[in-house]
Length: 592
Image (cartoon, rainbow, N blue to C red; front, side, top):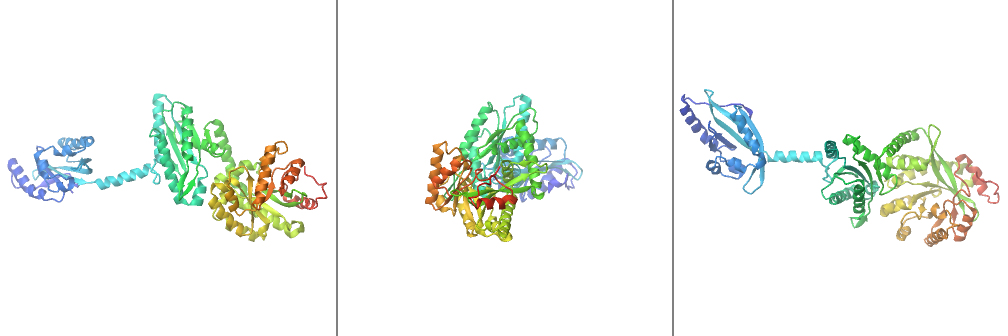
């Protein structure tokens, strides 16, 4: 190609300059006309002399247009690229031997095409400048590839939203503008879809991807092009709000977002209900990097998410301090399983009528290396969030089954007792849950009918169809199933009939003050009647007063659990407690 050499020598035996030019054009004219490339030859004075016929193939215009109008090339180049064309000629006129530029031209049908224009100064055998030889190459395909690669570099391939890299760039620009104008009026919103993993696990990643795309469309629609939406990864999005009138306007905007997200999404004729949590980082002159803004907004998000669904939190020093403690606890949580810092306590479940023990619930506890007891309310949500709940939940299940199996072998009073083990939402969505339970039962040699697995009402209703499949697989093993904390969520009577459950546990919030609050007692009686109508047994949690036990007995409640009968106790104490509670006439035993 001409562009690969700085000079194009044209041999000529004629010595006079006039004769040279004549010979030059005679030599080149026929060759250029029939060249398969779009080729130009210009005289030494810059006048266009020859254009190859291939120009019509490349640009859609016949060569005649260029002969009639020496500036026709300028006429078809898009306006914003004319400076590139002029730059090529400026270099050649200044004596440079080679110059090139890439620009767009307009075709007769108004479409645009990218061209690479390369020009070389031509000299004859005497070294005299005798013209310009140039080529035009169609590089549209190359530009399209580059454009696609650039788009992929800055955009998410699934939702087509700008990605994390673009987000950081835009935040840096916002920081620069705020610094120059001393107007710190932007906010970063870090958004995460609540319990999105359950959707992927239950409906599949195809459904999850489709839902993410619909959510992305909704977020863009709500912003009206004023704010910018980015997908950071997974189910996490960031919104950059600029030129805000105050923090109140940002919170009003979040209310709009929450309302939009809560609208059901239809997937395979099923309505998927979504919610989201938000972390907010308002502009702060003390924070000077985009990474810090994202990090702080994410810290606030985690704090807001800990308050439940639709959580919203604004970053401040208190949240940062709490985040450091959570990070420290998470690190400790990882090592706690290795160092065997977890242990179980067991709280008896008794017959409401005669107080005889029928089983017990396994409750996990954590005593860290410093000897401090960590509340389950603190470490269970963290384990759930980090995914450690799967490993911890399996340990709890194995330990509880092994403990009951051991006591069954040693003490005949344990033969008819059951152990209740709580399942987390993450465990319920684990595809290997049934295999895990089956394996543990075989390893510990505990009869399946001695195990009762507890799941919460909320967990079941997040995805009732998938939950039903999982529960039926578990039930096929021979284990019993129980709905825990009944009354705190929203469940359909249809699903209560559908699920293969045997027991309902009435939440302690209804039992508490039942003797002082008639409304609570009416709810308890209604739940008991409903459960019995469906063929289910009922356990009341949080029973602390004898009067409560009597009221539950009158309402027909089958079983009870609470401090009135026993606090959670260590495994070594179980034989004494079981012996005493298997013989109700021996009521001298009491717990502290």
